[in-house]
Image (cartoon, rainbow, N blue to C red; front, top):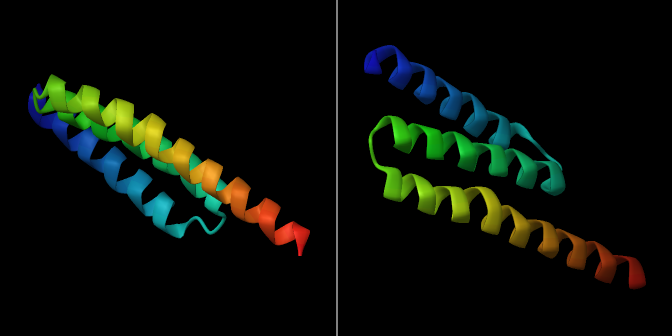
Length: 82
C-alpha cells in the first residue's frame, strides 16, 4: 500500500514544483509555493517523518509564502510612489 501512495505523493510534489517554477506572477507563485509546502508535508508523512512534516507545514506552507507576499506588497507600494 505504501508503494502507490509514495508514487502519488511524489507525482503531486513534482507537479506542484513544476507549477511553481512556471508561474510568473510573484503573488501567485507564493500561493503555489504554499500548496507545495502542504504537498511536501504529505510526502514526509508518507515517509513516516511526522516531525519533519509538521516543520514543513509551519515553515513551508505558512511562513515562507507569507514573507514573500509581504515583500511583494512592500515592493509594489514603493514602486508606485515614484
